[in-house]
Amino acid sequence: MKIEVVYGVSEDHQELVTLDLGELGQQVTAQIALEKSGLLEKYSLNVKDIDCGVWNRHVSLSHCLRDGDRVEVYRPLLIDPKEARRLRAKRK
Image (cartoon, rainbow, N blue to C red):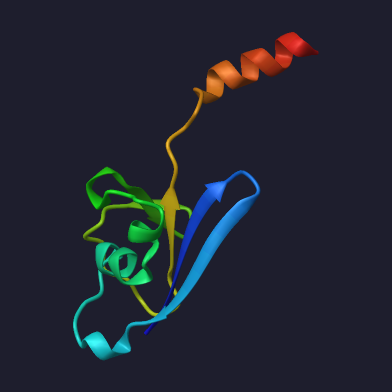
């Protein structure tokens, strides 16, 4: 089972890890994929605080993955999207 895990480190840098988790012989969850990717340790992320999704759809950490899935780690928003639109409109 091949899985991709992606973390957007910053606006212009993302980390992509490809995993082959077929040897686990069990249902692979999003949490297992995150832990096996090494991204949690590399970027000091706490698994309890993570929001993630599969192919742009928000899922829980207990979501069971299928072959070819792409797990995306979402960063917290820096500003409310409505406020960002207001600020952009004000600048124009």
